[in-house]
Image (cartoon, rainbow, N blue to C red; front, top):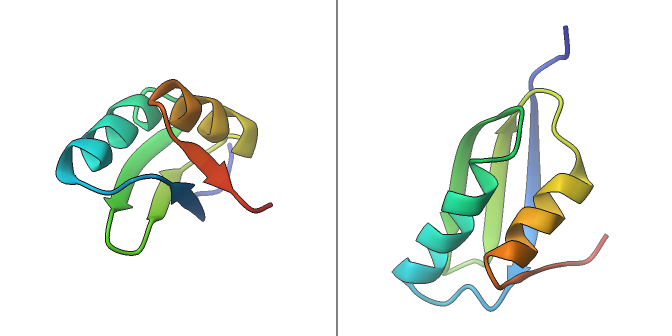
Amino acid sequence: MNAAIERIYEVKGMTCAHCEASVAEEVEQVQGVTAIDADRETGWLTVRGEGFSDEAIRRAVDEAGYEVVGS
Protein backbone atom coordinates (compact mmCIF):
# COMPACT_ATOMS: atom_id res chain seq x y z
CA MET A 1 0.00 0.00 0.00
CA ASN A 2 1.30 3.43 -0.96
CA ALA A 3 1.45 6.27 1.52
CA ALA A 4 -0.72 9.32 0.94
CA ILE A 5 1.19 12.15 -0.73
CA GLU A 6 0.62 15.80 -1.50
CA ARG A 7 2.44 17.54 -4.33
CA ILE A 8 2.25 21.13 -5.51
CA TYR A 9 2.81 22.10 -9.14
CA GLU A 10 3.03 25.49 -10.82
CA VAL A 11 0.76 25.65 -13.85
CA LYS A 12 1.44 28.19 -16.60
CA GLY A 13 -1.58 29.90 -18.18
CA MET A 14 -4.26 29.04 -15.63
CA THR A 15 -6.01 32.44 -15.48
CA CYS A 16 -9.76 31.91 -15.01
CA ALA A 17 -12.37 29.63 -13.42
CA HIS A 18 -12.67 27.67 -16.67
CA CYS A 19 -8.90 27.09 -16.60
CA GLU A 20 -9.09 25.75 -13.04
CA ALA A 21 -11.98 23.45 -13.98
CA SER A 22 -10.21 22.15 -17.10
CA VAL A 23 -7.04 21.32 -15.20
CA ALA A 24 -8.96 19.73 -12.31
CA GLU A 25 -11.10 17.64 -14.69
CA GLU A 26 -8.05 16.12 -16.40
CA VAL A 27 -5.96 15.63 -13.25
CA GLU A 28 -8.79 13.95 -11.31
CA GLN A 29 -8.71 11.17 -13.92
CA VAL A 30 -5.12 10.24 -13.02
CA GLN A 31 -5.05 6.95 -11.17
CA GLY A 32 -4.29 7.45 -7.47
CA VAL A 33 -5.44 11.08 -7.29
CA THR A 34 -8.00 11.65 -4.53
CA ALA A 35 -8.12 15.46 -4.20
CA ILE A 36 -7.20 18.49 -6.29
CA ASP A 37 -7.02 22.20 -5.57
CA ALA A 38 -6.36 24.39 -8.61
CA ASP A 39 -5.82 28.08 -7.80
CA ARG A 40 -5.66 30.48 -10.73
CA GLU A 41 -4.60 33.40 -8.56
CA THR A 42 -1.37 31.73 -7.44
CA GLY A 43 -0.99 29.39 -10.42
CA TRP A 44 -0.60 26.46 -8.03
CA LEU A 45 -2.12 23.03 -8.42
CA THR A 46 -2.18 20.92 -5.25
CA VAL A 47 -2.70 17.20 -5.80
CA ARG A 48 -3.30 14.61 -3.07
CA GLY A 49 -3.53 10.86 -3.35
CA GLU A 50 -1.56 7.65 -3.43
CA GLY A 51 0.70 6.24 -6.10
CA PHE A 52 0.39 8.91 -8.80
CA SER A 53 3.47 10.06 -10.69
CA ASP A 54 4.65 13.57 -11.53
CA GLU A 55 4.76 12.53 -15.19
CA ALA A 56 1.09 11.48 -15.11
CA ILE A 57 0.14 14.85 -13.61
CA ARG A 58 2.20 16.70 -16.22
CA ARG A 59 0.49 14.74 -19.03
CA ALA A 60 -2.95 15.49 -17.60
CA VAL A 61 -2.19 19.22 -17.29
CA ASP A 62 -0.85 19.17 -20.86
CA GLU A 63 -4.02 17.41 -22.04
CA ALA A 64 -6.03 20.27 -20.49
CA GLY A 65 -3.99 22.72 -22.58
CA TYR A 66 -1.66 24.04 -19.89
CA GLU A 67 1.90 23.43 -18.76
CA VAL A 68 3.54 22.47 -15.49
CA VAL A 69 6.57 24.71 -15.08
CA GLY A 70 9.70 24.02 -13.07
CA SER A 71 10.99 20.69 -11.90
